[in-house]
Each structure stands twice: as C-alpha cells, then as structure tokens.
Length: 71
Image (cartoon, rainbow, N blue to C red):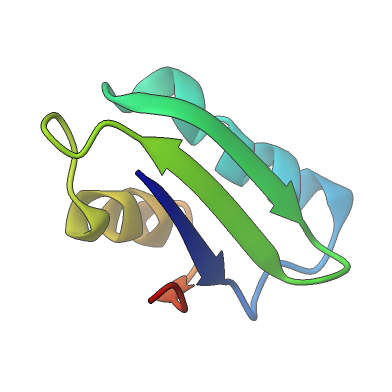
C-alpha cells in the first residue's frame, strides 16, 4: 500500500532525512520518500505489518505531525 502524507512542519533537508529514517525503524515499510520543499511524505508499506496510525505515531515521536491526504 502507498499513502501520501502532508507534513507541514517539515522545513529542511534534515527533517526529510529524519522521516526517511523511519524506513529502518518500522517493520513493514518498503520505502519512504520525503520532500521538505513540497512538505509531502510518501510511504510504501505492508498493511498487514503496519498501520497508518503507527506511521503517524512514529513521526509524532520525531516531532512531526503528518496528515494522511491519500484517498
């Protein structure tokens, strides 16, 4: 499954790198692409191992507040 999140508090390249680091921390994530310029994070993950809520919670712990904008 692939979901797109708006991350309004992602303001620099380091912010994007921090969020992309979740790829190594959360089981079930296949890929994360974050753009601080667009304030968008795209996450491809295995929904049988990980939920959207778990992704949002993990980002919250890093200090970011993603909003699911996928349909």
